[in-house]
Image (cartoon, rainbow, N blue to C red; front, side, top):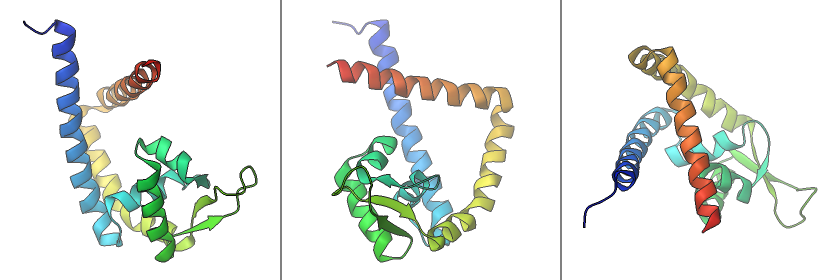
Length: 150
């Protein structure tokens, strides 16, 4: 029995996404390392840069388990890169917030991050880069929709 065209597209999208994930993680480790962070630490700090979130909110934003985020958040708090704050809407689910030390670590990443972003924009062209991000965002939203239905 042969695969349908939709199955072929689905498989290719998945394999390409897995490859992209590996590529992005490798790049993130290279960018974060000199700032004393790991890619996972950078992800969690990045999720709370605009404002504190509960661990479950960070997990949802990142698409990983709450337990993984909790482990990383605890490490970040121990290292002084994040802190727990009271959550006015939920007594037990504290908010994760970035500290000044965490912001300073992110600032150390930004110059190389900007260089890499510019190189990718040059490689793709600004319009294609924008379209690529839009398509990836739409793909993620579509997967959320169809997996919520099952």
